[in-house]
Length: 299
View 1 (cartoon, one colour):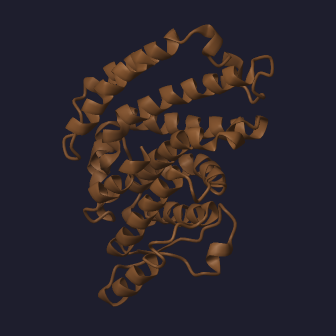
View 2 (view 1 turned 180 degrees about the vertical axis):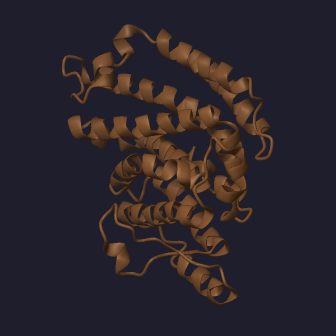
């Protein structure tokens, strides 16, 4: 953990020195990522997750003690989290993501792996259920990565992230309203509520919010002067009230569906074609940086 903290110091400097327009220096990201991978390899064998558990859908090894199982899981997720933080500056705008296609794909895959791992842990043991606070930091960070990727490049990431996004939302349903992580996530959702009307996005009707996860219940509308004030009122209802996890998951689902639907407004952007970046960003109307800032507390 001393070695991990030393790497974390370098990553923190990378994050704080990067701005949304220029991003980090290109050579810093692969070097820091390599350092995290080397740190992960240096973990004692007794504290490494067996490779079979990473490659197959099998239960957590019952031969290990519970404390060892927990450490194995947390160290694996710590490595993933540090790698997500390294790539985080690239997620600030669609332009940066298009200019860094390999890095963008990498951080999305790490986030998806994190969500799949925690979901599997929840299904095969009670470690997650008994220690949610420890694991939900990793879950919410991964959820934020997928959200930003889909918001900035919906044509590239909407379909490929959908399964893992809904997996994460199923876990969010069980969040305790008293937990610090729930408060951080709700703070981000409140920020989205205030941003939505500016971008011309509005929530679905009350009846639509009763639909199950996976259904299309988010709408994309025109940001006209006539409906903007009405939308602002709708998205700011009960701002000071911390809802339960089910309510938060529904709000995030509405946004995810709305971002995916933005593909129909912008055309089919392609990361292989930098000239299409303006198409992907056009519906953001200059709110890329604000959207990224809203999720900073989730990392």
